[in-house]
Image 1 (cartoon, rainbow, N blue to C red):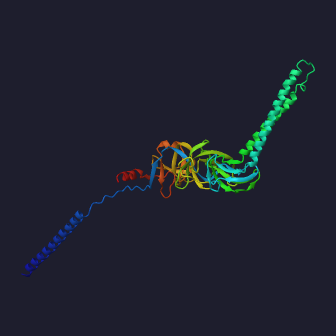
Image 2: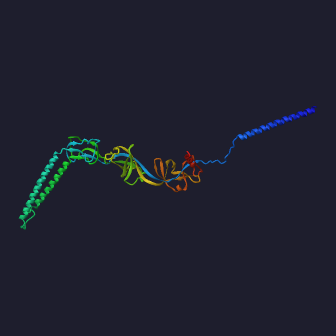
Image 3: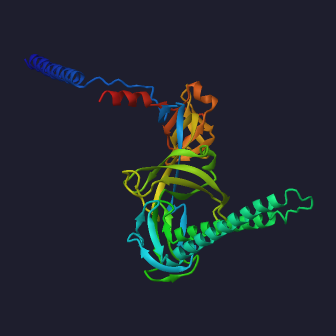
Amino acid sequence: MEVSRNKNGAKDYFKRIGACLFVLLLGGGACIALVAFSTPKVTINTEIDTRPSVVSMPATLIEHQTEINVAGVLEPAEQTDIAFELTGKIAWLNTAFIEGGIVEKGTLLATLESFDYETQVVQQKAQLALAEAHLAKETAMAKVAEVEWANNPKRTELALRKPQVDSARAQVTAASANLALAEKNLKRTQYYAPYDALIVKRRTGLGQVISKGESLGRMVNLSFGEIRVPVAGFDRPFLPGLPAEGVQISPESMRRTGTLTRHIGRFNDTTRMAYYIVRIDDPYGIKTDLEPVHFGQFLQARIPGKRLSNVLKVPQEWVRNKAIWLVNQEQMLVEQPVTVLRKEQDYALLEAQRWVNKGHRIVNQLPEYPQPGMLVRDTSAAAALSLNGR
């Protein structure tokens, strides 16, 4: 009975163990299934692109109009001291004959007391009349002498009164010249402006007695003004032929046009710069409706220079150690030496070279430590697609 009971107990024990193992296997399989279905599949890319990225742009040749920026002070091109050619007393002054007055060409500015010069004219007219009468008398007497000495073989020029006639004729000529001078002096008692002028100084007053050539004031020509501008040595090769029109003058918010007329023929001893003259017609706007610019005003000028063909225009910061960086068709960096023709503002103008037409592109965003021959990844196309998709 005990043996049979032991056998039955052993069977129950193994049954319980088998049931536990089955439950464990079933739970483990369920866990594995849950993990397998809940975790997403991850694709591992074994090829990682480690090349540094760059951004480039095509090398495009352009036509470029150079521009030379200069500045200077507007000065009068011509000035004249106001003075009479005679001695006399100031009898009248134009009200515009003051500092800052503007007068047109031919305007009467001042007159001298004319009585003495009018008297000289009358006197010279009288002298001329006497000389003409004397000439008429001598001419008549010469005709009588010619008749009287017609058949005399010993007649002479003195007997025919030819020297007397010549002397009388000379007296008429001298009297005519003296009369012309007296009339000219009478006109000189009036001073007229020789051109459109700005009065910049006055040194006289009514009733003042002046001497010949004494300065009564000063005026400057308003027909045109000049700006003396310095041009550096690196700018001179790009100057256009002279005279050059179309110079843009910028007095503050206004716009005027001038002409580059000439080089003054010498260089500054200190800066070694050459000085050129820019001319502005009618600066005070007397003949036109343009807003005036004034003598002594500081002006900036932009001179259109020579036109350059087939050049590359890049920011100056891209040029390092006289070279720029390129990326070739094999996606390799190339350090390309370049010739800088000119620098304008923030840009450099480069001479065209053979690599331009070989598919090279100019790199405008470099990796941190660029090296010639470095393999890079040009992201320009992706950037362009991203911009176009916005």
